[in-house]
Length: 168
Image 1 (cartoon, helix red, strand yellow):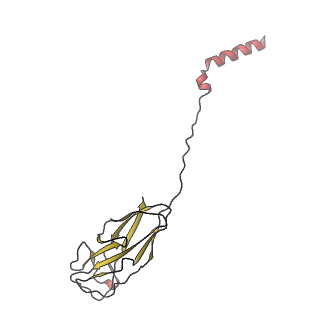
Image 2: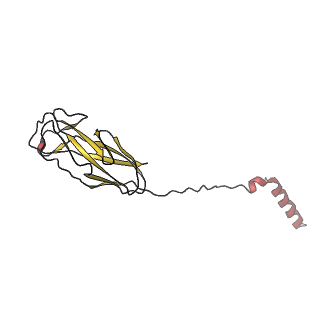
Image 3: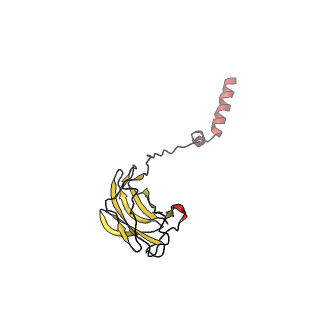
């Protein structure tokens, strides 16, 4: 008799618990995957380049194959380019980068070997190229337009051009 009462109580207890709750999950999983990639570019030839002694209002250019840009990354990259005001050893007067030369103001342009024609380099990003393949290379040259008036003719000017990669 005792077993019968326990069985009845157990049956009543199970009847009170909804069946949906008995089978409800308390967790759920989502699986995601990703493959690592890296962006990496380098100038593998041509840098540094010395234009030598330059005169006021002069334009000097490197060969269009002077510099080789290499995408050492694992994905295609879009490349932008920008320039900087010069730095001067010895505390002399620096040159400011602008679209056109002026007093102590220089201009710089680039030209890709595969797409000749000079493009002005600014202090803000300018498109260099899109979709440089992983392990791909591209060659370019630089053209310097010197200031129309140079205040400091004693100290060497150093001009930096920066190329930056982003994922294509």
